[in-house]
View 1 (cartoon, helix red, strand yellow):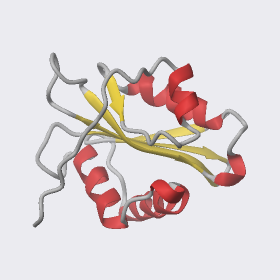
View 2 (cartoon, helix red, strand yellow):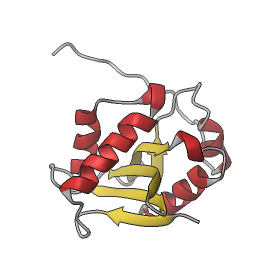
View 3 (cartoon, helix red, strand yellow):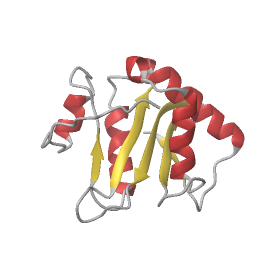
View 4 (cartoon, helix red, strand yellow):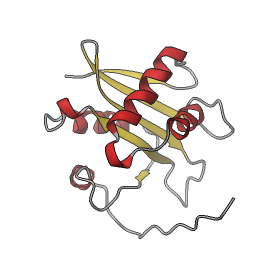
Length: 148
């Protein structure tokens, strides 16, 4: 069973813990990874260090090993958009297929106040876990990337 640590605006994250989680997510998101800067911004938002309603970071450990991490940001749009977005979830490759991803996900869903949405690539194997947990694909997401 995983040992969980929750970070939010009430339970602050140290610089060392932040770096550890950013590095972990960057290394274990595989082909779905974002930059360390983007991961750091999502964590800063969850910790209410950036403008917005906050969220939380969840870390799952076995002994001293990080098994997985989750970042959930509140959307501030309750009533018409789910209250939370699961921004990142990753499990260390050596711990995959042992139920830890499901355990981590269930704890994150328990902690989230309100509905949760996530974006998942069609070819992401974790998609099947999300469907088993009750997530549905109600909409197709479309994005417009404007030149900056």
